[in-house]
Amino acid sequence: MLVTACRTEDEPPAPEGRDGADDSAEPVPAGDPAYLEGDEGVSEVRAWFLHANEPDLWVAPGTVHLDAPTTSPLDAAIDGVISGRPGNPEAARRLAPPGTRLLGVDLDAGVATVDLSGFAMPAERTASEEQAFAQQLAHTATQFHDVDAVRLHVRGQAVAELWGHLDWSEPQTADPGALAPVIVESPRWAAVQPAGSVTASGSLAAAGSTVQLRLIDPTGTVVEEASTTASEEDVGGRGRWEHAFETEAVTPGRWAVGAAELEAPAERAPFRMVVRFAIEG
Image 1 (tube, rainbow, N blue to C red):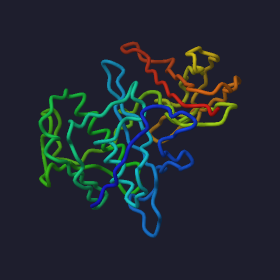
Image 2 (cartoon, helix red, strand yellow):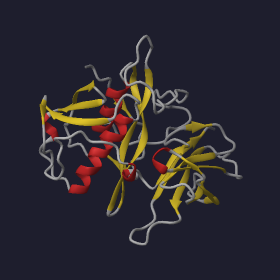
Image 3 (spheres, helix red, strand yellow):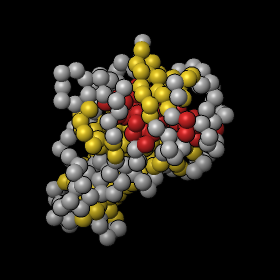
Image 4 (spheres, one colour):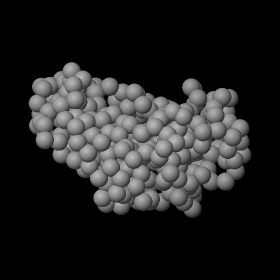
């Protein structure tokens, strides 16, 4: 099965040179079919990348821009996990070993079989990293309504052991507990928007929990701080949140929204995420 080459923007683009990215393209929403028929295809998909809040590892979605439209968004999204650059390079990273290629994705009876090249095998990874890699694949694949789990092959052969910590003989399913405690979905990393109001939105680990937000201007100055509570329950019991900042972003350049959980368990540090975007001049 052909996999369309893909990339993610690893730096917020300057307003006048967007490296060919189509910021008007809509991301593929959860529930879209894994394969589109009679369609010109999609220009971007979502892939789940690793976010570290040492010593904890989490996964969170990022937008993957495609070099060409594809009618196989499942293949393109999985390829983003394997070879795409994380959209947020300050916090996110890949786990697939260098040189690993996606050889194909086969979907049968709700299970997506992901076939990787041989470079996937020789890797020194911890048990937490291998579990996170499984969740990257599982969350990325199961965003499509006709995928329930992921099975792994290497060079066409089923594997029970990849990096020595996890049993891959059974299909891997998405665990909501593997998602980052705070996820910022809007603004998107490296998005370009006109000067004016900024609305941030995303999800928290549970409805009723609170997120602390900061709006940061191009000089690194925090121009507004606020907090909001996730009130609407989302898939997996997560809470949805949204906040419109009162301060308008009018200075051209790179801005950022910082988000941190206020009610982290005592055994770990609060999770923080920063998303950088650009204001047009």
